[in-house]
Length: 255
Image (cartoon, rainbow, N blue to C red; front, side):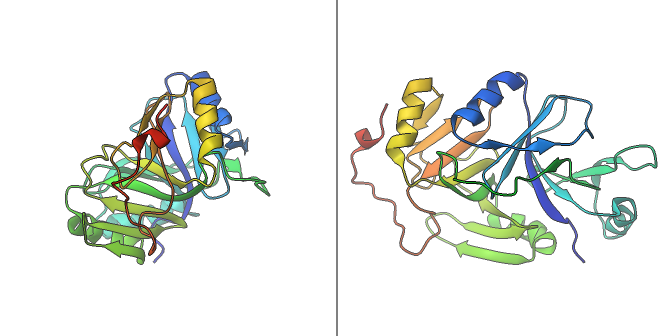
């Protein structure tokens, strides 16, 4: 059974949608055409691999959202299989959606249809580079994997040292489970090919950031106005050829 459906968006609540719009536009994410499902202010930015949705409404966020058709009937099957829903809105007169949490408290939501039209083509990645993972902080990777494996049965990568890290294909998006103490909230990971172009934009626009934040060798963490962290790397940290170089000069990306 396809439990969660197809990945739609990484949804975040934005106290000031104008500030967040500026942040993602500055980094070169493409704004996509949205539908009229939601009554609150809503915008979506993408790069062809991940969609970041900005919601101007009260909800526990961030949320990883999936689309599953005939959600009302599917929800009954999920309930029979022991899912404990955080919220459940199913009725003929509403847009059907539900939410539940993983063992570490991260919110997963599902809805009956898409709320935006993905762009046909993305000419380029954002200035952050190529997206490769949503990273979730977990207390115990194996315990967390016992929750994720049934709903995202395809494991993409596994690493045991120096910290346990498991990556699953969750409805078309890579989700990584990490015990790293440097990871405090669900975050987005990118592999950047043009560090100087990114550095120039950070300097010019005064984007909030942390150089060498300590997560898996990232050279910078960008902090969106609503609190989302985008970690940027030279390479995918689970790639075969990648090793964190502790001997480099931190000034290479200091601003």
